[in-house]
Length: 72
Image (cartoon, rainbow, N blue to C red):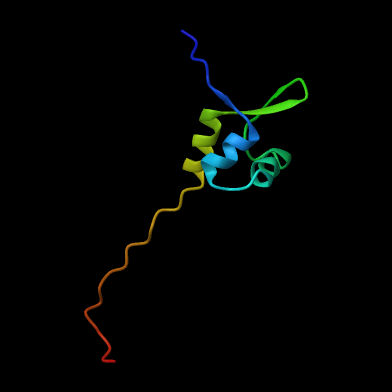
């Protein structure tokens, strides 16, 4: 069974990432995200956006309490 991945426009990707259209265009230009050329149009698979977000997600650092508190 072949699953069909939804193809998103640059504007749709920018909206999902909360950025302007220049950012996804730069990702495409630098070949940092998978994209599909449909004629002269560029589309980005939905899974590529999810993979990009997962790969660039930074986990928070857990700080240990040292027990030493400074008085103000």
